[in-house]
Length: 188
Image 1: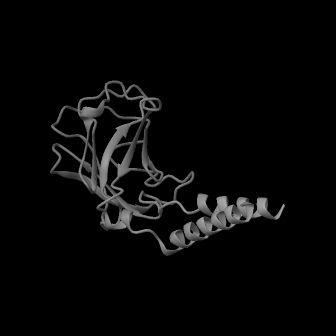
Image 2: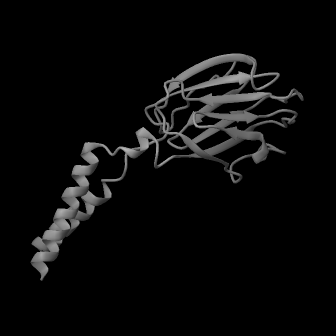
Image 3: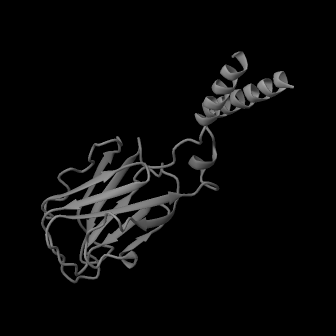
């Protein structure tokens, strides 16, 4: 009985010792609507602190884009629009950015095609760098309620925020390993 309790506690400590989050939760994010090119700000910037869960950051979006909202989770952005249609300017879309340079560098962005309902939206409409994600709706028709969801990955190495474990994380990992070692020694 005693050994099984030690094993359960040690396994629980190991599971709790994952790396610190390097995504949006708890971070300040910004958004700007860019038009007629990627260098011209039409509206914004808007900023919000990402709470996660079911909250929607920027619930009313931009004044000229009626019915849009932007919801951030730790490693994804969901855009909902009810009215729209986008002309064929070089760039007609949104730039999400890290205004405080506090989020780990972005290394990849992908579209969740299972949830995305924009006809004609594909990977060529998304670009990114270490601190920015650009979403270009240029020339897309809008038949009604639309959803776009993108996920991102951040750099696990080379980023100061992603590569330095929190002290509590290291302590939990050490306790978990010590508990497993003690359990194994008693079994032998």
